[in-house]
Image 1 (cartoon, protein in one colour):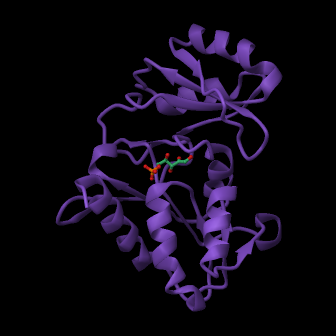
Image 2: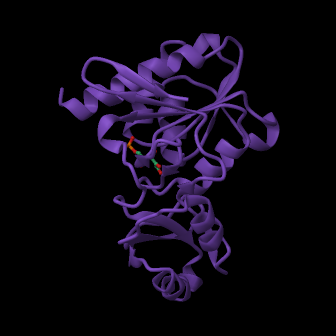
Length: 219
Ligand code: 5RP
Protein backbone atom coordinates (compact mmCIF):
# COMPACT_ATOMS: atom_id res chain seq x y z
CA UNK A 1 0.00 0.00 0.00
CA UNK A 2 1.41 3.46 -0.84
CA UNK A 3 1.89 6.22 1.73
CA UNK A 4 -1.21 8.21 0.78
CA UNK A 5 -3.49 5.16 0.96
CA UNK A 6 -1.95 4.16 4.30
CA UNK A 7 -2.58 7.66 5.61
CA UNK A 8 -6.17 7.66 4.34
CA UNK A 9 -6.86 4.31 5.99
CA UNK A 10 -5.30 5.42 9.28
CA UNK A 11 -7.43 8.59 9.29
CA UNK A 12 -10.59 6.67 8.35
CA UNK A 13 -10.06 4.22 11.20
CA UNK A 14 -9.31 7.03 13.65
CA UNK A 15 -12.68 8.61 12.84
CA UNK A 16 -14.41 5.56 14.35
CA UNK A 17 -13.65 6.91 17.83
CA UNK A 18 -16.33 9.58 17.21
CA UNK A 19 -19.01 7.03 16.35
CA UNK A 20 -21.54 6.63 19.14
CA UNK A 21 -24.14 3.88 19.37
CA UNK A 22 -27.55 4.39 17.77
CA UNK A 23 -26.70 7.58 15.88
CA UNK A 24 -27.38 8.65 12.32
CA UNK A 25 -24.03 9.59 10.82
CA UNK A 26 -23.40 11.93 7.89
CA UNK A 27 -21.07 10.42 5.31
CA UNK A 28 -19.04 12.33 2.72
CA UNK A 29 -17.61 11.30 -0.63
CA UNK A 30 -14.27 10.15 -2.04
CA UNK A 31 -11.61 7.50 -1.72
CA UNK A 32 -10.85 8.28 1.95
CA UNK A 33 -14.55 8.15 2.83
CA UNK A 34 -14.86 4.86 0.94
CA UNK A 35 -12.38 3.40 3.43
CA UNK A 36 -14.50 4.83 6.26
CA UNK A 37 -17.63 3.29 4.74
CA UNK A 38 -15.91 -0.11 4.69
CA UNK A 39 -15.14 0.26 8.42
CA UNK A 40 -18.68 1.49 9.07
CA UNK A 41 -20.13 -1.54 7.29
CA UNK A 42 -18.53 -3.83 9.86
CA UNK A 43 -20.29 -1.80 12.59
CA UNK A 44 -23.62 -1.18 10.83
CA UNK A 45 -25.65 -2.79 13.64
CA UNK A 46 -24.37 -0.11 16.03
CA UNK A 47 -25.84 2.85 14.09
CA UNK A 48 -29.38 3.76 13.04
CA UNK A 49 -28.25 4.69 9.58
CA UNK A 50 -26.42 7.26 7.49
CA UNK A 51 -27.13 10.41 5.51
CA UNK A 52 -25.16 10.44 2.27
CA UNK A 53 -23.54 13.36 0.44
CA UNK A 54 -23.57 11.73 -3.02
CA UNK A 55 -25.10 9.05 -5.19
CA UNK A 56 -21.71 7.27 -5.18
CA UNK A 57 -21.56 7.04 -1.38
CA UNK A 58 -25.23 6.03 -1.26
CA UNK A 59 -24.57 3.13 -3.63
CA UNK A 60 -21.51 1.99 -1.68
CA UNK A 61 -23.34 2.15 1.65
CA UNK A 62 -26.44 0.34 0.37
CA UNK A 63 -24.24 -2.39 -1.13
CA UNK A 64 -22.62 -2.77 2.31
CA UNK A 65 -26.00 -3.08 4.06
CA UNK A 66 -25.98 0.37 5.68
CA UNK A 67 -29.38 2.04 5.78
CA UNK A 68 -29.30 5.38 3.94
CA UNK A 69 -31.75 8.01 5.20
CA UNK A 70 -32.84 11.37 3.79
CA UNK A 71 -31.65 14.53 5.52
CA UNK A 72 -35.17 15.97 5.13
CA UNK A 73 -36.41 13.26 7.50
CA UNK A 74 -33.57 13.03 10.02
CA UNK A 75 -33.11 16.60 11.23
CA UNK A 76 -29.63 17.67 12.34
CA UNK A 77 -26.95 15.04 12.74
CA UNK A 78 -24.51 14.51 15.61
CA UNK A 79 -21.58 13.60 13.34
CA UNK A 80 -20.36 14.11 9.78
CA UNK A 81 -17.27 12.35 8.44
CA UNK A 82 -15.76 13.49 5.14
CA UNK A 83 -12.45 13.88 3.34
CA UNK A 84 -10.97 16.99 1.73
CA UNK A 85 -8.67 18.06 -1.07
CA UNK A 86 -6.83 20.54 1.14
CA UNK A 87 -6.82 21.68 4.75
CA UNK A 88 -5.00 24.56 6.37
CA UNK A 89 -3.98 24.78 10.03
CA UNK A 90 -7.32 26.39 10.94
CA UNK A 91 -9.29 23.38 9.63
CA UNK A 92 -10.59 25.38 6.67
CA UNK A 93 -10.94 23.18 3.63
CA UNK A 94 -11.08 22.94 -0.12
CA UNK A 95 -13.50 20.22 -1.18
CA UNK A 96 -15.22 19.13 -4.36
CA UNK A 97 -12.57 17.11 -6.17
CA UNK A 98 -15.28 14.46 -6.42
CA UNK A 99 -17.90 17.03 -7.52
CA UNK A 100 -20.03 16.43 -4.41
CA UNK A 101 -19.30 19.79 -2.75
CA UNK A 102 -22.85 21.13 -2.51
CA UNK A 103 -24.40 18.14 -0.77
CA UNK A 104 -21.24 17.88 1.35
CA UNK A 105 -21.65 21.49 2.43
CA UNK A 106 -25.30 20.92 3.28
CA UNK A 107 -24.61 17.82 5.39
CA UNK A 108 -21.68 19.57 7.11
CA UNK A 109 -23.92 22.55 7.92
CA UNK A 110 -26.56 20.25 9.38
CA UNK A 111 -24.06 18.40 11.59
CA UNK A 112 -22.94 19.27 15.10
CA UNK A 113 -19.47 17.72 14.67
CA UNK A 114 -17.57 17.60 11.37
CA UNK A 115 -14.63 15.20 11.44
CA UNK A 116 -12.43 15.54 8.36
CA UNK A 117 -10.16 12.65 7.36
CA UNK A 118 -7.10 13.26 5.18
CA UNK A 119 -3.59 12.02 4.54
CA UNK A 120 -0.54 14.25 5.02
CA UNK A 121 -0.43 15.32 1.35
CA UNK A 122 -3.60 17.41 1.86
CA UNK A 123 -2.13 19.77 4.46
CA UNK A 124 -1.09 23.24 3.22
CA UNK A 125 -0.13 26.56 4.78
CA UNK A 126 -2.30 28.56 2.38
CA UNK A 127 -5.32 27.12 0.56
CA UNK A 128 -5.38 27.27 -3.24
CA UNK A 129 -2.76 24.87 -4.54
CA UNK A 130 -5.67 22.53 -5.36
CA UNK A 131 -7.94 24.21 -7.95
CA UNK A 132 -11.06 25.46 -6.18
CA UNK A 133 -14.21 23.68 -7.43
CA UNK A 134 -17.29 25.84 -7.99
CA UNK A 135 -20.67 24.27 -8.80
CA UNK A 136 -22.66 26.38 -11.29
CA UNK A 137 -25.99 26.02 -12.99
CA UNK A 138 -25.28 25.19 -16.65
CA UNK A 139 -26.68 28.34 -18.31
CA UNK A 140 -24.56 30.57 -16.03
CA UNK A 141 -21.20 28.85 -16.59
CA UNK A 142 -19.57 31.45 -18.85
CA UNK A 143 -20.89 34.40 -16.87
CA UNK A 144 -19.62 32.90 -13.61
CA UNK A 145 -16.26 32.12 -15.23
CA UNK A 146 -15.83 35.79 -16.18
CA UNK A 147 -16.56 36.87 -12.59
CA UNK A 148 -14.04 34.34 -11.27
CA UNK A 149 -11.38 35.84 -13.57
CA UNK A 150 -12.17 39.24 -12.03
CA UNK A 151 -11.50 37.69 -8.62
CA UNK A 152 -8.03 36.65 -9.82
CA UNK A 153 -8.61 33.01 -10.77
CA UNK A 154 -8.28 30.91 -13.91
CA UNK A 155 -11.50 28.87 -14.17
CA UNK A 156 -11.45 25.65 -16.17
CA UNK A 157 -14.70 23.84 -17.02
CA UNK A 158 -14.60 20.24 -15.78
CA UNK A 159 -16.08 18.92 -19.02
CA UNK A 160 -18.02 15.65 -19.06
CA UNK A 161 -18.90 16.00 -15.38
CA UNK A 162 -22.48 16.60 -14.28
CA UNK A 163 -23.04 16.84 -10.54
CA UNK A 164 -25.68 14.83 -8.68
CA UNK A 165 -27.73 18.04 -8.78
CA UNK A 166 -27.56 18.30 -12.59
CA UNK A 167 -25.04 21.14 -12.56
CA UNK A 168 -21.50 21.80 -13.85
CA UNK A 169 -18.14 22.39 -12.18
CA UNK A 170 -15.57 25.13 -12.78
CA UNK A 171 -12.14 24.41 -11.25
CA UNK A 172 -10.45 27.69 -10.38
CA UNK A 173 -6.66 27.61 -10.72
CA UNK A 174 -4.10 30.14 -9.59
CA UNK A 175 -5.74 31.30 -6.36
CA UNK A 176 -3.69 31.98 -3.25
CA UNK A 177 -6.46 32.15 -0.70
CA UNK A 178 -5.30 34.46 2.07
CA UNK A 179 -8.81 35.25 3.39
CA UNK A 180 -10.93 32.10 2.92
CA UNK A 181 -14.20 33.34 4.54
CA UNK A 182 -14.25 36.51 2.41
CA UNK A 183 -13.53 34.64 -0.83
CA UNK A 184 -16.13 31.99 0.03
CA UNK A 185 -18.78 34.69 0.51
CA UNK A 186 -17.73 36.55 -2.66
CA UNK A 187 -17.92 33.46 -4.88
CA UNK A 188 -21.15 32.24 -3.35
CA UNK A 189 -22.62 35.67 -4.05
CA UNK A 190 -22.15 35.42 -7.84
CA UNK A 191 -25.47 34.80 -9.59
CA UNK A 192 -25.53 31.26 -10.95
CA UNK A 193 -23.13 29.81 -8.38
CA UNK A 194 -24.68 27.00 -6.35
CA UNK A 195 -21.74 26.89 -3.97
CA UNK A 196 -17.95 26.86 -3.98
CA UNK A 197 -15.74 24.23 -2.42
CA UNK A 198 -14.31 26.51 0.25
CA UNK A 199 -15.35 25.37 3.71
CA UNK A 200 -14.33 28.39 5.78
CA UNK A 201 -17.59 29.64 7.30
CA UNK A 202 -18.24 26.08 8.42
CA UNK A 203 -14.76 24.53 8.77
CA UNK A 204 -14.15 21.05 10.13
CA UNK A 205 -14.28 20.74 13.91
CA UNK A 206 -11.56 18.10 13.88
CA UNK A 207 -9.10 17.16 11.14
CA UNK A 208 -7.49 13.72 11.43
CA UNK A 209 -4.28 13.60 9.41
CA UNK A 210 -3.09 10.08 8.70
CA UNK A 211 0.67 9.63 8.35
CA UNK A 212 2.72 6.47 7.87
CA UNK A 213 2.80 5.64 11.60
CA UNK A 214 0.56 8.08 13.42
CA UNK A 215 -2.62 10.11 13.14
CA UNK A 216 -2.25 13.78 13.94
CA UNK A 217 -5.30 15.68 15.15
CA UNK A 218 -6.12 19.35 14.48
CA UNK A 219 -8.80 20.50 16.86
C1 5RP B 1 -15.56 15.09 -2.96
C2 5RP B 1 -14.59 15.62 -1.96
C3 5RP B 1 -13.60 14.67 -1.39
O1 5RP B 1 -13.71 14.69 0.00
C4 5RP B 1 -12.23 15.12 -1.78
O2 5RP B 1 -12.16 15.19 -3.20
C5 5RP B 1 -11.14 14.16 -1.27
O3 5RP B 1 -11.23 12.96 -1.95
P1 5RP B 1 -10.25 11.75 -1.67
O4 5RP B 1 -10.58 11.22 -0.32
O5 5RP B 1 -10.56 10.76 -2.78
O6 5RP B 1 -8.83 12.26 -1.75
O7 5RP B 1 -14.61 16.77 -1.60
O8 5RP B 1 -16.35 16.09 -3.51
